[in-house]
Amino acid sequence: MCIFDLTDSTNNNPTSTSLLFFSPTHFVSVLGCFSYFLLNTCLSFSLSLSLSLSLCVMASLSLFSVFVTFLLSLTPALSTNSEGNALHALRRRLSDPTNVLQSWDPTLVNPCTWFHVTCDSSNHVIRLDLGNSNVSGALGPELGELKHLQYLELYRNEIGGKIPEELGSLKNLVSMDMYENKFEGEIPKSLAKLKSLRFLRLNNNKLAGSIPRELTSLSNLKVFDVSNNNLCGTVPVDGPFATFPMESFENNRLNGPELQGLVPYDFGC
Image (cartoon, rainbow, N blue to C red):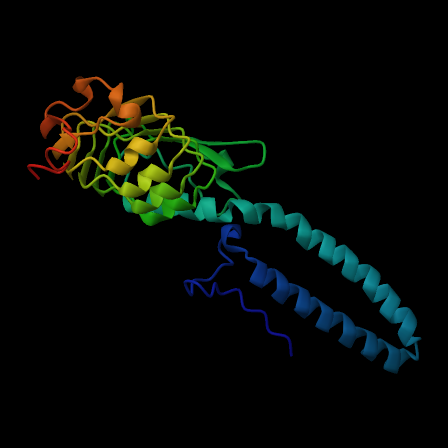
């Protein structure tokens, strides 16, 4: 007997409730079951009706190819599964009293029809606009799955907790605006991997620790603002930091520009 289980092996949740969770493993399972069904049907008809087994097999192969084509037509949705899952995980983490995330329906094949989400022509999520949306809660590591994301706009909310290290995986990110929230902890060093980043605004939060020196390698960075936090140490002077105004660093516990070779960059932390 061919038994097809639609349980997602990664989280033991039934996947039949959402096309988002249709995986290549399930694709192979369906294909195997269908092949088993065709073979047994051919054998049964050939024995009971004295039909030519070869003719039955040929007809079955034609039907099989149609079935494979149908299944393959579903695979474009697989490229957006991880993105849809990531955004749905974000929705579960956030409190949304004004229902701005109401359109985020996990039963849809991809999130490109959701409000506040923008996709490119290949149905990849490239922009997330939740600025000034009155949401609260915390971010999770799932956001690192939005590999094509270019704009992350979460400003003027009540989002707290730490900034996930996984945001450093968003290699296409151009703008990260998370100012006027309640983020705490240190600025992740992993953000130095965002070589396309041009705008990084983290001002008016509760961030602590020193400014990671790894960020001086972001040669495309044009705007950097960490004012009104609880940062300590000194202000970097290398790379793009040589051009940022001191207003971008005010109202912290910073000790002024770094005096290289004289005091440690985290002096006073």
